[in-house]
Amino acid sequence: MSCRRSLAPAVALPAMVAALLGVTLLGVSAPAKAQEAEASAEASTETSTSTESTSASAPDMRAPGRSTVPAPAFGPVPRIERRNDFSPQNMAVELRFGPYAPRVDDSASTAVLDDFFGTKPRFQFGFEFDVQLWRVPYVGSLGVGLGWSYTRWSARNKPCIEGSSCFAELPPGPDLPSESSEGDIGQKTTLNIMPMYAVGVLRVDVLARELSIPLVGYGKFGLGYALWWINDGTGTADYGGVPARDTSVGTQAALGAMFLLDVLEPSAGRELDSAAGINNSYLFFEWSVSDYDGMNVGTNTWVTGLAAEF
Image 1 (cartoon, rainbow, N blue to C red):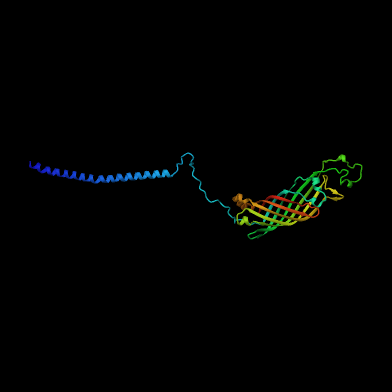
Image 2 (image 1 turned 60 degrees about the vertical axis):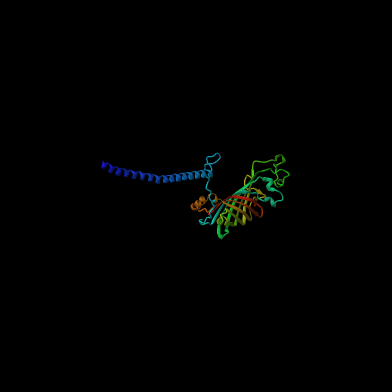
């Protein structure tokens, strides 16, 4: 009996200690778990509030009338870069086209040209070749040019009837024309004019070369020379034994402007310069004036065409 009494307190004491420790640990861990739960709830509340704030500030791109395509990124507008990689430049060529009305009637008492050939517009075509001898700094090029063009006027011949100015010049004979033969005949008379000139040329290209403005102004002045002849349908016309062909000499002048075509495709312009040595290509427009002595086959007219520098 004494053994049982001594073992009971020994067994009961550890059990009591374990129970006390369990209660103590439970009391310590409970507040910690409560704090963790409170912190988790606060974090969840903050996340929910942030999400709601973001949703309220950001527009709903799925709403009707809103685009889901992102806005384009606008950058600075590209500018035409000033070229400084030109190959040597010392020549220019122009292909020229425009109306031509010779001023023959200016020196005549009557409108001979208009009466016979009419007032229908006629045109010329031609070319010009320039040598650019000197480049003036911050101005342009100074050189000389040679030009050639051709134009032709034609109309059906009319019989020389009695009462007309040419009737008295006809030789006597039994077959003189009469008024009954009035009207056009099959043959044509043509007035052929071949103007040529030698001029000094100033091309002001500082805007295009230094400021990237694709415009070039120019002026020309020099001497003009024209060949002309009249064909009456059977050969060179003859008036009182004098062939109707001659030359006229005078002055030639022009003012014009050129548009630099290279700005439309700069890379192609550089390739053309590298491959063929063509520095620049232009579309030009000019007002041209030619005034000749003798039979004035010169004209005041506009001319347009294409030009290239190389």
